[in-house]
Length: 66
Image (cartoon, rainbow, N blue to C red; front, side, top):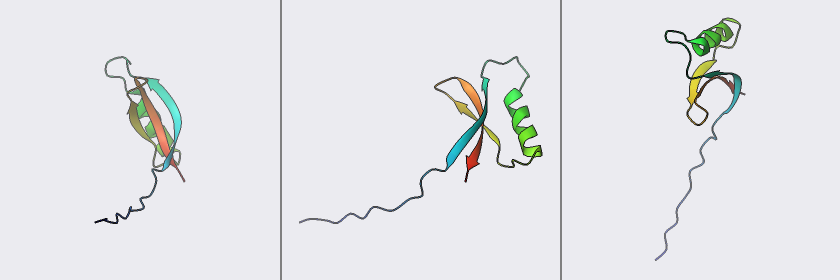
């Protein structure tokens, strides 16, 4: 007996653009990546956000590329 499996088409992950990189070991109480993302949002990039890149131990400020 054979069965047929249908593969669901999923939307690929949206492409992301890295606007800036910040080292994870910044001074205590300092959030330069969050501050940079806030400036980007104020300047018209409402989707600017901070993510952690564990491989490089950096915070990345990214936007979705459309």
